[in-house]
Each structure stands twice: as structure tokens, then as C-alpha cells.
Amino acid sequence: METGTTILLIVGVYLLISLLTGIIPSLRITSSVSGYVAGDRSMNAFILYFVIGASIFSSFAFLGGPGWAYSRGAAAFYIIAYGVIGIVPLYFFGPRAWRLGKEHGFVTQAELLANRFDSRFLSVMLAILSVVVFIPYLTLQMVGAGYVLNVISEGLIPYWAGAGVTYLVVLIYVYFSGVMGVGWSNAFQGMFMMVMAWVLGIYLPNTLYGGIGPMFEAIMEAGNTAMLEAPGLAADGTAWNWWGYGSAVLVSAVGFSVWPHFFMRSFAAKNVKTMRLSVVLYPTFLLFLVPILLIGFSAVVAFPGVEPADSILPHILMQLDLPAVVIGLFCAGALAASMSSGDAILHSAASIGIRDGISQVVNLTDKTERLLIQISVLVIGLIAYLFAVVIDVSIVALLLGSYGGVAQIFPIIFVMFYWSRATKAGALAGLFGGIAINTLFLLFPEIKPLPVHEGIYGLIANIILLIGVSLATKPDDPERILRFRNSG
Image (cartoon, rainbow, N blue to C red; front, side, top):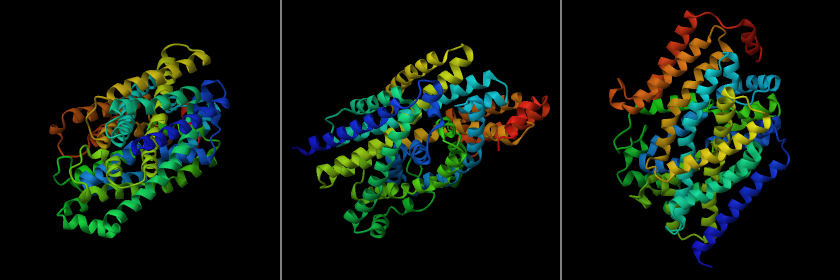
């Protein structure tokens, strides 16, 4: 059997297993919206651990991480830096959200906020914001899948076809199983990609250089010392400054725990203990980024000039004299990284768009709402796919751009639980002021006073408006505020 055929056969078997793993849970959940969106609040610690971990670290880590290490060196360490602290808020937010969800039937982030601030308008606007930032995030996952299958087939499978086949599988099991399909498939995909990452991250430096130490010595001897000096290189190859690096870490850390699809997992936990245990165990999942970055560094001297940088992992695999079965397994691991976030994002985008958007404007029965969410899975998947086949931007840059917008949700989540004087007017002013400033500097970066991430400017405006307008307006209903204060 030819090498290419063997590789594609293994990838095909992996996709089939993923499909079955994702479809089977549809037999167990109820046909209600709660069953589809929150899994009837039945996720145990094992499933939740992988949902939390695999939902965040995806194509951006498995392909974008090596891509940044390969092209920008130490700049890639920002991914580990923000991941270490970004999970902490969920330890405090998650249990409060779970208790309120259990008592009042909430299954999304916007439902919490809309109830605390008594604003359907806020719910609809958060739904729009969430879907807008989810589409590039989902596009990112499809881009990764397209890269992998195009490179390992040596161009035989077009980029658009690779992304299409992979995400057809995702669409099918998300459509039928909802969050439990996402959960069980993430457990399988998460274990698979962690094993592949560690094996490859150790194997490549040893094969190409004789060890991890000699690999870094070779990079220095080749004159690439700037890549090993923090904060690494900027996108144009010049030295990245600490303003840019530090602000990228800060914005990503702030936005990390309030990504709507990530925050929603709080409602799916079996109980508060399960929620907290999953958060505490999460840093062990983060360790898999270490071999991921070693993969990128291993190619700096051995395979110079590869474009785009995000395709470096499948490129390395095809250049080494490895058995076809091994290459196929590693490529399946890369697809696992893409799919394990793509399914969670797709499910959440559809759920939020209907439950927090459409249902706030039109009265829907439970059955109709679930059907509309399922239809939205197909529509949003198609939109993201159309973006994926025409996009030409770094995978990490695509994600980093989304973080500035989603980080604007953090201040209102915080005050929802911890500042009773926050008002509806203050929350709306802060959220939309922050988004406006973030968007302004994203579109016109040349007008920034300092070279920091645009999300920082958005957060400054957000907090000032949130506090100022809240203090200048009448306090909200004390009874509603007390409900949220007592959720801790």
C-alpha cells in the first residue's frame, strides 16, 4: 500500500471514531434545550476536564503554536504565560454560575447577565458579539484541518476539501448530540492529541539534533539568537517589544475564562465539586504546550523557509523518513486539536445565537428552540467554512484579534457577582464603549498612543464607563442583586 494511501486511511479511521464517539451520546440526553445545550447538567470531572482543556487548545496550539515558535521564537511563550493565569477566574465564577443555573434554568452566559441587569437588549447584544467573535475562532479550526490534509496528501487533497470533510464530521455529531457529543468527542480527541504532542515533541529534537539542548545550540550557532530572547520576534521579523508581548498576555488572560463557549461549561457540570476539580486539574492539560513549542523550534534550522509557518508540523512529518502509520497518527492528532475546539465553538455559537438572541425577540417553544439551534449549527458552520477557504492570516494572529473583543465581557461578569452597585446602564455603557474602542484601534492601529494590544484600550474605557455610569444612575433592584451576591 502506498504511503499516502496508508496515511489517509488512518486519518479516515480517526474521523470515523470521532463521529461515532460524538453521535452515541445523542441516545442518552433528553430532547429538551437543556439537554442539548447543557447536557442535563450531568458532566462528570473526567469529561469536563477534557472539555475545558480541549475547547481552548486547538489548531491555535497544535498548528499555530509550532508556527509561532518556528517563525517568531520566544514570542510563542505568551501562550503558556496567559494560560497559567487565565483559568483562575473560573474557579470563582464557575460555581456561582452553576448554582444560579441549577436554580433558575440558565444554560448560557448571557442569560446570567441579562437576568442580573434586567436587560433583554444586553442578551441580544451579547449573542451578536459572541457569534461575531466565534466565526473567526471557528474559521481558525477549519484552516488548521485544511493545512493538515493538504500537506500530508502532498497537494492531492485540496485545502478546501480537507477542511470540508473534517468539519462535515463535526457538523453531524454536534447537530445530533449537542454538548454531550462535544464532551465525549473532546475526551477522545484530547487524550489522542496529548499523547501525539509529547511523542513528537521529544522525538523531533532527538532525531534532528541529538537532544533538546543541542537543538537550541544549533539555533544559536545558525545566527538565530533573537528567536531565543524574550519577547521574541514580531510578525515582520523584527524584535517584538514588551508592550506588545505583555499586553497580548494580559488581554488573553482576561478573555480566557469568559469566552462564552468556555464559560458555558460551568452549567454542564454535575455539581460544584466537579466544576472546581476540573479547574484545579486544568494546568496539567496546559503542560502539553511544552512539546508543542519544541516541535516548532526543531524546524528552525532543519527546515528553513517554510510558508505558511502554521503548516510546519505536517511539513516536517512529510520530510522525515517515518513509517506511514506513524505519520498518519500524528496527522490525526493535529486534526484532533482542530476538531476538539471547533465542535465546542460551533455548538456554543448556535446555542447562544438562538437562546440569547432570537428567543429574546420571538417566543419559542422548547422543541422549536432546539430545532433552530440545530439549524444554526449548519448555517454557522457554512459561514465559517466560506471564510476558511479564502482567509490568508496567521492562525495565532486570527485568535489574538478575537480576544480583544471577548475580553470586554470580563468586567461585567466580575461586577455581576462582586459589585452590587453596578447598574444596567453602567454594564451597557462599559461593554459597548469597550468594544467600540477595541474595534477602533483594531482597524486603525497606527493611531494607538502606545504599541499595546487594542483590547487594553477597550478594557480601560470599559471599566471607566462601567464604574462612572453605574455611580451616576439609580441602583438596580436589590432583590435581584441579592440573588447574585448569595450565589457564592
